[in-house]
Length: 289
Image 1 (spheres, rainbow, N blue to C red):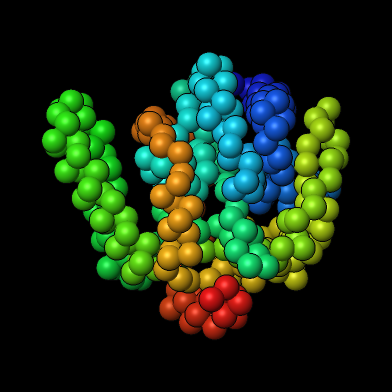
Image 2 (image 1 turned 180 degrees about the vertical axis):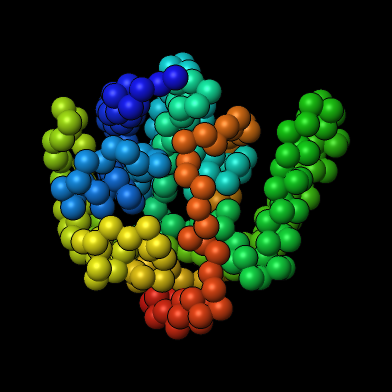
């Protein structure tokens, strides 16, 4: 059994190691999401369900060197959404025991007009059954293509590749996903800070970013926080990102064995009817299209 003190030590050593390897390959990653919020509130960032980093798409050029380094250090690494292309980011795990795992997510932000956007391809709007069906179908074909039998036959492999490309095009054109848009000035500049013997990057305009992301009541911890409390979420197809997707690096995906360490909770991506109405009123889409 891993003690609380050991968990804390593992958490901070993992955070420091990931941050160091990102720097080694000149990937300008900033501390993001819940970890950033806790840091700015001057709370202890441990315990946290995840260690979150954000990177800009231009910093993907060295990402596979980073991935290979992690694998050599016994990290489990796959893509967010288990896509065979490194488009949305990385889902990483360090397993310390059967009952203690540290989860690290690295999200890719794409520059679109005056925003940095996260397309969230793996988050189709749950109320849109067509979008959900397309995503499940695309996922199944991706998994089948990885099957040893198919990959060993050139013709089958070719056919599956074409089917996946067509399904992906349809999904990007017609499916609705829950996307994030952050104003350019919130993430454009990064600054270095030091905490827990670890030097890491945060957005220079952290306060503006946090207000945009979490809403005006960001100072008060809220276990029932919803995406609609902030301003970043909107619903749309993925047409803007098709060019990025088709140029994304190929990635050999794996099934992450365990989700121990992530707390059970209702998904923040599962919206009520009232929330969907509110999101649809967002003016972000009009700025992007």
